[in-house]
Image (cartoon, rainbow, N blue to C red):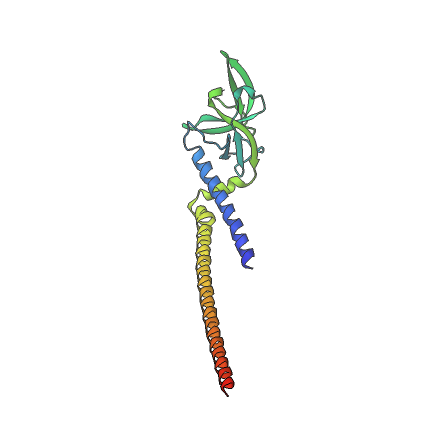
Length: 215
């Protein structure tokens, strides 16, 4: 039972650590609007609107990968720097047209769920990466974790429980070691007394044998 409980807690802990790391990375990766962090070229992002529905929605987490703009083609979905409601942020839309302006490629984009194309033309320098994968439903968890209650329930409390359990295990291990040492000490003492008793018996036997010889 202890082994099963330990295994379950270890699995839960690793899940919590993974979710924590993912949440922290998705939060910090886009904190700087001029530079997007990545791991081996991949960046997880939470979806903030339904503009690309049904390809992906606000309930999903998407993964984008760094790419060479020269390799992009019409129909690809890209993430790029954009000005939305007078704020610089990241936008992820589908390429509808690629043109050449003075030797440089520019991209027309549109959300699958939007009736018209984006007003701003995307340049190669604005492109962060290409959409490669979505994880359905994980976006909801990321949004829940961004709230104080969600972070407390999903991250802090489980980690606190695991910490308390580890302290309990440490205390029990120390007590078991002390009991083992005590039992070992008692065994050694009993063995010493037994050896002393055997020695006394041997001496008594020798004395009796000497007495019999004198008779």
